[in-house]
Length: 373
Image (cartoon, rainbow, N blue to C red; front, side, top):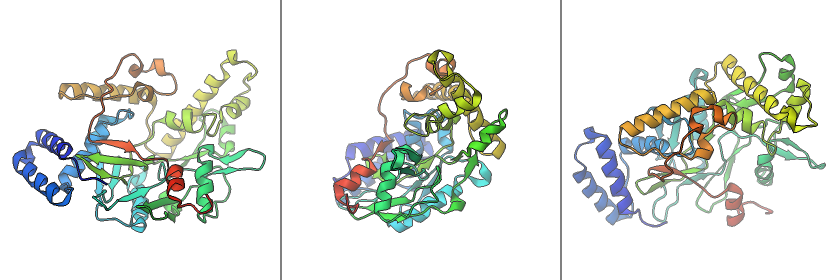
């Protein structure tokens, strides 16, 4: 790992002080940081810089539609936690603290950063909660097909597997440097889940579907002013379509549209019946209904689209660029019926921001940390 880029540190500090006049003149802080980088190759953010930098990273996340509340992100400053064991414990605490009373609050937990010659921790999981995918001999999959490879990998590391349901929570994998990952199960009391039902179709509940409530992304690197925080899981709350139009509906995921269509009595022999569209709508109705009935925070794609345009307007009034990736901002259902569909967006890459790590499987294979692979 190379020394921190002084230009990146300088740019962030100037921006931080410009947006936070109470922090005082930037000149003294610049001298302080430049001297620290020259002496150690890196520098340490103040608690205020870290918190605001994390919020700015959310503000700059071009793929996120839910940025209106970026300033309310709760930042858990755990930079003193450097061990896999400590990271695993605090990831579980993150899940517990992110959903008090079933009301989801945007939260990020920031662990030790990379330093020259001293890598910080990494979380291999894409999200803190994901479901296993068990490959059967007949080619079918019980659970989430997206995580068949990850499930196979954790089996190689000694995970005995869960009960064998379609919704077995995968263990966490945490590593530091090139060392083997620590595997840690997520206790049941930290996994808030919502059983799915439909307001009009009693048979829907008999499908036995559920989904977890806290979408805590954990495989991205938080970059603030040239400092890289490789383990910084963060969450907002779900938009219903993420579950109802993607996780449960995608052909390479749970692929439930044909199941729902059959129960609805739809003609699946022709695409002109629009059976996929009708089944998809009912899936999303069920997800929104179930979260509301359970008292768990969730938003719908029409409401969130309007909120995003409000965020865009606020950013423009503040004189800031608001980057957005159209292919991610437009919801995966009824796109043209939402306000975000009918315009173009700035695609600039901003900093601070979040960046993807290499895939966990790629990391495991590359470092030889998974026995038998």
